[in-house]
Each structure stands twice: as C-alpha cells, then as structure tokens.
Length: 567
Ligand SMILES: Cc1cc2nc3c(=O)[nH]c(=O)nc-3n(C[C@H](O)[C@H](O)[C@H](O)COP(=O)(O)OP(=O)(O)OC[C@H]3O[C@@H](n4cnc5c(N)ncnc54)[C@H](O)[C@@H]3O)c2cc1C
Image (cartoon, rainbow, N blue to C red):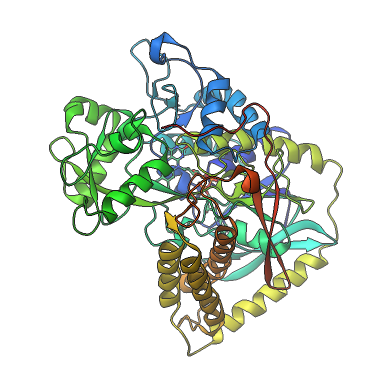
C-alpha cells in the first residue's frame, strides 16, 4: 500500500511531535511514523529539565541570566566545537519555547512566587534549568501528544522505517514495515523529516531506551547524506549501578554530592570551582580515574549522596529518582547513598544538517538527537537537548513549510520499486533456517564499542576494536533469526536495527581514530591535549561503494574565541 502525505515525520518524540504541530498549523498534511506509540518514545524518560534564561532565579551576586550567558556556557561546554550561529539561535529562542509549552498546557514546577522554577545544572553559570520535578520529558511529551490528538494528525504507530527513497537525487518518501502485519508500506512525500533520536544502544551500559538504535541516522548515511562528529558520545556520570538507569544531574543540581570509597568528595580534587556540577565529560573521566586507581567499590561504582537534602526536598523535587533507587537498587536515598557509575547517555553526532535542518539530500531534513546541527559540539550540557528538540522541531518545520510549496509529488514508481526490494530483502532474512545467533552479534558489538570507544580511547586499542566491528558486519548476513513469520516478528526488527547499528559503530570508530586530540567527551590517552590548530573542525563521514570516508569542515565561531576550560 502506498500512502501519500505532504510531509512524513519519522519519529514521535518531542522533535517529531513539535514539528508535526507546526506543519498542521500551516495547513499542510503531515503524518508521523513511529516504531512505538509516540508516548513510549525516549523523550518521555527525560528527567532533569530544559534550559532557558528566564532569569527567575538569580545567579551569584544577584546577577540575572541572559541568552548570552546561556550561549557562553553552551559553547564552552562544547569545548568550542559547537557552531555558534546555531547556539545563538537556540539560546535566543529558549525562553519563548518554555512559555510556549506552558501555553500548550505543560505543567512546570513553580517557585513560591508562582514563576517557573529553575535549578542549577552541570556546566551552567546560572540556575537555568526549568523542570517538572524529575519528570520533565514525561510532562512535555504528553503535552505535545494531547495537542496532536486534538488536531487529528495521522500517526502510523508501530511502523518501522526501513529505507529512504531517493529519486534523481531527491528524497521522495520512504518505506516502512508495519510490525503487526509484517507488510511493507510505501510513503510518498514532498519532504521527509528524520526525528528518530539517538543511537546509544550501540554501547552496553546505556541510559537509553532499548529502541534507541539510530535507524534515521544510519539510513540517511546509506541514502547518501553525511554524518557529523560521530566520535562525540556522551557518558553520564550518574547511572544506577547494575541497570544504568539515569539518575538525573538535577540530583546534583539540588545539592547531591559524589563520594568515593574513602568517603571523600573527590570532585573537589578534579574541578575545585564547579565540583559536582562540572560538565559531564569532566566528571565521567574523574570517576573513571577513581575506579582505575582503586578508590571505587568492587565492580566499579561510587556513591551519590542525597541524604543531607532531607526528606521534603527529595520527595518534592526528585520523586522519580527516589522511586528508581528503591525499585532497582533497593536503597531509599533519604536514608542511603545511591551506587552510581558512568554510562553512555547521548549522541552528540548525527546527520549533518544546516540551521534549517536540511541535509545534503534535497527533500530530506533531520532534527533532534538524530541530527547534528551542531549546538552541543564535543559535549552537551544537561538541559540543552530537550530544548533543542522543541526549538528545532518548530524551526525545521518552518523551513520545510517554506520549501514544500515549490515541490510537487513525483511518480510513484521509485516508491513501488523500493517496496519490492525491501520485501525481497525481508523474505531472504526470514527464510534463512540456519546460521549465526543475532543476539551474540549484538552483544559482541556493544561490548566492543564500550571497550574501544568509551570514556578513555587509544589508537591501537581502537584499531583492534574497529576490526572486530568489521568482522561482525561480515557475520550479520549469515544470521538466522529463527522466526519465519511476517506478523509481529520482533526478531526481524532487531535484525534490521543491528544492521544500522553496526554501520553507526563503524562511523563512531573511524571518526574517533581520526581525531588525534582530546576534546569534550572524546578523550585520547595518547593525545591528552586539545589541539585547536589541527582539530578545531567538524568530522564528516560519508559512505561510497560500501567504504566509509572521513573528511572535515570548519566550525562556525563568532561570539566566543576558544579559551582553556577552567573547572
Ligand atoms: C534517561 C534520559 C534522561 C534525559 N533527560 C534529559 C533532560 O532532563 N534534559 C535534556 O535536555 N535532555 C535529556 N535527555 C536527552 C533527551 O531526552 C533526548 O535527547 C531527546 O528526548 C531526544 O528526542 P528526539 O525527539 O530527538 O528523539 P526520541 O524522543 O528518542 O524519539 C525518537 C522517535 O523516533 C522513532 N523511531 C526511531 N527509529 C525509528 C524507525 N526505524 N522507524 C520508525 N520510527 C522510529 C521512535 O519510535 C521515537 O518516536 C535525557 C536522555 C536520557 C537517555
């Protein structure tokens, strides 16, 4: 079956839904495709908050926040790799975006004077993070979804994007597998927006939902778009030991502290000024060092102590964190310390796009975590990602609205051909009766990525682990998923996911090996210094004839010249 819509939005998270509302507002026919119900999108799990320089809480010395302060912190936090025009746009738009969400019905936490509450977050010079207790993503996503339902925007739920259709160099639609029936559908569109989120699940210890496997990013690469800054993978310092569920930075924003096994507040030694609220890359590396030097608990964890905050504050501002700690670690943070370790958290890299979200393929756009616009550079500040999703969800939709008026639907033939090819490919996967085990390959990939491309990286080690990824890529076509049914075949979905994840793993690996310096989340033990002379530039990856190629393009500076980061 071929469906036709002006705009296809792939992704039902904050980015996809915000864009869908904008498209509808403009009178266009936009439809959302999502591999899960939109409310199960990963955005729903976001905890700590969204940054905006509302200035509702004054900084040190009674100084009020401004968008310029927000931009400065973002650029500095990015280790100067963010494009400063994009940062300026995001920070200027932030206050309006928070208020806009409020007007759509979002419930924010409040100060006693009734204004929207703001809390300190890592790497920020002011209490800037607006929040809804520790369930900000939940409140935001439900708000947008309720608005969507009211406007009757079509949603293809549990449809899995399988390919982007390119005809004469232009993206004219996509194919998707209807998971329930196993049928391949075609979608014809005048523009396609990728809003498919991050790819954190290429690592074994991750705060990301199991669905964060990055198909939008890998399929864009296969379709001919470029990926940018893939080596920059963020590791969050406080994930719950054992399950790696996130313990929000908001917990440290409220006053929580990190302790090693000697009971020492070790961040005082690594970042004397910002301590437990240093940027994430700084704290994760410090924790890694504490673990390596034997000052952590057996198994490799440290403690996050919230006890001094008292029961009232914990219950009011961090109820979700308390519940997670009790349910998954058996500790009540009111009385006990929480065992934590760093875990993969965010993908700074993604599809290379301009400020309007346009990729190098006409008709194909990307926004949110799957894209690299680049507002986070080498290291994202907490609270800036939720902001990015809603700001650029709207702005990229505006760009699409402008562009599509001059574009007509083309012939259906390319969509039909893509559907037939996908059907044959799926048939082949289902019919293989014997072969390698899918989950062994997936586990080997996540282990390899954590070993070679984690917090600390070194050339030889990375090269060996890249070879392992290449080996796994060769094994994948030999896999038998042991389930030949078309309907509700989750093994088939896992197979298709893994194909893309292995491609993204290689992109991370090649980008990391090529960047011979340390910047933000990318720390090379063999090149421990930042090298602005040779590497103040974005890494690009493209794929031609099955070969990945690394190239570079300049970073857009402007407001702030690179300076040394002082913690
Ligand atoms: C635990 C956690 C807490 C966080 N807390 C914060 C926070 O407090 N503040 C902050 O700023 N950031 C936070 N982040 C980051 C932030 O939540 C994410 O970056 C952001 O929500 C991503 O939104 P998105 O719209 O880009 O993608 P997502 O919300 O991940 O949505 C992706 C969508 O794409 C769809 N999709 C993916 N692949 C396919 C496919 N093949 N076919 C069809 N559909 C597909 C999915 O179904 C989904 O609907 C947190 C991240 C984590 C992991």
